[in-house]
Length: 507
Image 1 (spheres, rainbow, N blue to C red):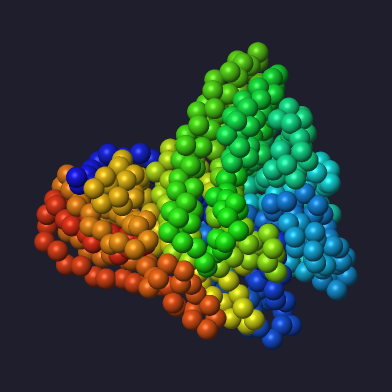
Image 2 (image 1 turned 180 degrees about the vertical axis):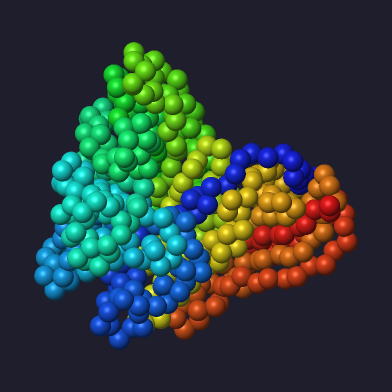
């Protein structure tokens, strides 16, 4: 058997926003991770840890979601603006963090970080303990150009120009910690928040730039997620529809039922189980996309030409990643090390997102620094890039390329595959999920190609990981290849590895 690749068999453009990241006030993600403060002995730029800032600039995440997550539902944005010395101190008990919160990293610090790394901001408003008025004022503070009191307050805090934030999440996990709502009660609560959003336009006929995002279901509950989406869209489309652009589903690859399995200690069964677990997301995406289409098909025709009809809602995976059992017990909260087991599931998840580029628009890895499926860990004044960071760097070239129809698994080798095309370059992802055995993949292109380069991420042993003492124990390598033009090529893959192959089409 061979893996067939036809550069003309296209699916859709890969939205760079599928490579988004997520930061939240959990554990040491932000405080002591990203944010050390301007007076810290740790090298920093305006309070942001220099090592993290440099790494994020190179990674260039297209989207950065903040402040939560569950934290967003108790966060009051005014606590985090103005003179840092006068900001209130509260207590953060979200997901085992259990620490004082001095609100030093607030709206302006976050948005300046987005500017510094070239990320588009996604702000989640506080629906559970906040109010419609508070959310609207936050949007006014961030985006109003005219000289209102809130615009002048933003200018006084150092940013005269509007930030131009488009993405606004309305609530978080409303089915659980965000209010234990039903789809109907959430839809009722969503309506005034979305309707109250400032338009920031100069004409009633101009389309607002704001992109309101509603809570989707718990992606890990097979029966509930189907019923939630059906009931939400029934409630949303009854009578006139409020503004809605995105629908945010969360899916975690849970690894919590085996006490002896830890992020850095596991056997072959644990390796295989965790890797297999991430693959469910593909079914979830296709199921939820179909349910959204079903809901939109039931939208009634408006009775007036002045009324709008809801015709599109984007599917978003706002949180995804591996969640190991130890994360519930460690201090700092939710800190996980990252091995090739995690890097492989990160690669396969990105493959799923990109392969379904016609169905999913945006996604965020949970989370960026020191929490769960991290791309960066910090230890004292050291910044450590995890193997997940390498996967995202290897996959950067897929952004804005076009996904191709390729078998997800090559039958003979068992390798997982994905491919995209941009101009005359075909990128092929090949992941060998076998923990101990190498494999070979036969590639068959419909046109002659020349193999130019392969980036490979692999480890010396399955539980190997990066630390401050050994920051490059698991690191990608780049190998230049100079093959002849041909349709058939063979590629060998190390055990437990992720590879990205670059091929150039003959013109």
